[in-house]
Amino acid sequence: MANNDIGDIFCPFCKMDGVDRRVAVRKNVKSKLYLYCDHCGMIQPNLPGAQDIILSHAHIHGFKKTPLAEAMDAVKEGQQPEKSGGFVKEKKLVPEPESLKGEKPKPDAGGILVRGLNALFSD
Image (cartoon, rainbow, N blue to C red; front, side, top):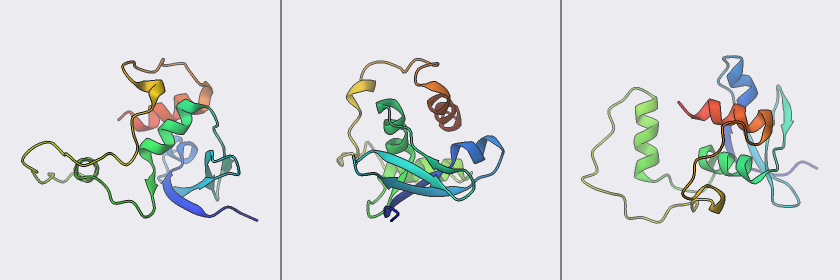
């Protein structure tokens, strides 16, 4: 039996081929996130770095986007974001991972999937 979809994200492998395909984000029995693409199959990165990348780039169903996330989406679509008049003082949906606080991830850390995800979302 398949796990329920909890969100969606772009498939990193399809994106490397130039295809923008949104795929399901699911959670396994051990509460690890994974992607399921109808074209590529199950993509299950289980290291903390890849889990953090999925959390930071996925749209999780049922959560309202922060104004900053909405502004970033508008910029990606070529629109001028609305000015909010200051900093967002709302709570973040996902706290910054302990593994990334105060340091940048190494460019070759985590294997090919993590490098691919970092390259995909660094634009």
